[in-house]
Image 1 (tube, rainbow, N blue to C red):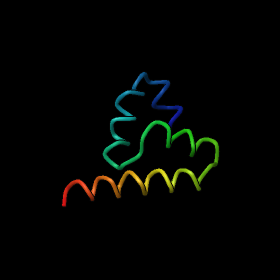
Image 2 (tube, rainbow, N blue to C red):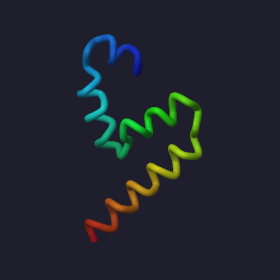
Image 3 (cartoon, rainbow, N blue to C red):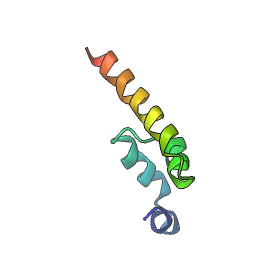
Image 4 (cartoon, rainbow, N blue to C red):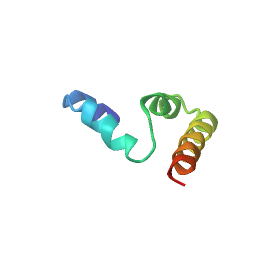
Length: 55
């Protein structure tokens, strides 16, 4: 799916869509490199920071 979006020149929109799910560009790199531990750590931190700021 990532390759398809990039090929269709929709990379910017793809990353904007992912950000609505608390997934950043560098987190995608973790996933592409099968670095699930850092992906989970980074995403958890981002979600926690978001929750901390809305309460």
